Length: 214
Image (cartoon, rainbow, N blue to C red; front, side):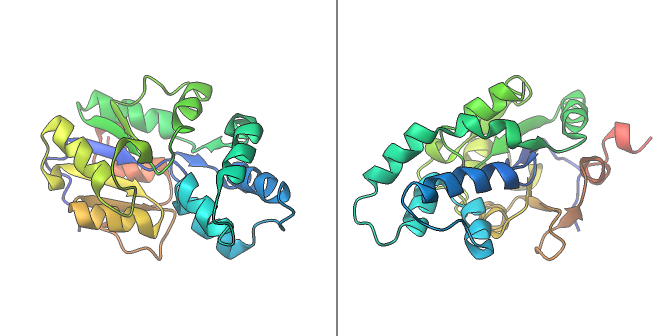
């Protein structure tokens, strides 16, 4: 069971937690694959690229290529900006973040996105909503390694059990496990976690924030 006493930081994964990015990511990678005459993502590929960095996804989707520069050139031409409007913000996210901040708790992001995260935050007017945002490009190793969570702990001088990470993939679970933080699995009942939630309101209740437990 998760002990919320002493929680000083709440950290969100982006894809699948803050946003439903299924439609956006599927279109983005399908456009890249189409540029090389490849078929659209199958379900296994889609599940896997959801957890990966862009670099990891490119290696995974184009294993036959020794030089991936042509793929990166295609990525630059397509641009993720075109699919950002297809990202659907999770209902209740804004309200939950406000309650977290009102409680004096650090509100952060740990994501395997790289250079697209800043644009996502700008487009959805979230740039001032988080105290810290750590992407895969900010650390030596992306999730499932604990580097992102460990960086947040270093910045705020926090102990592992003062941090709760909200994620939806095995990469998130492994990162939290390695960092020894609390882990809430979001909309993933089959994922091992200290607690599970299917809505932002449930996360607020788990965190015992006053807004959700009045």
